[in-house]
Image (tube, rainbow, N blue to C red):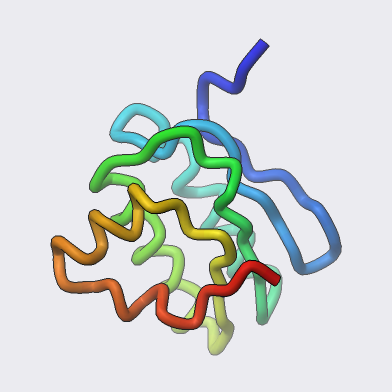
Length: 104
């Protein structure tokens, strides 16, 4: 059975994976979970390779999580940013937010 809502899964102590859809429907369910995550740890890496589809709500969520991490004097790093999310970021002029992404 596939993932019908987005989920954050811990992979290592400071590395997590976001899996499933990242859309207007799933973002509200993930919002607080991500905010709690970045408030607990100074540096978090979030692997996005498991995102099955996304829309502008997904981009807004990533930006909000980044802002929250920065307010906590922390950092949220993204890895394996999907092409669809990069395209939305480019269309809205915020592609620089994913400039240091790598496939490490």
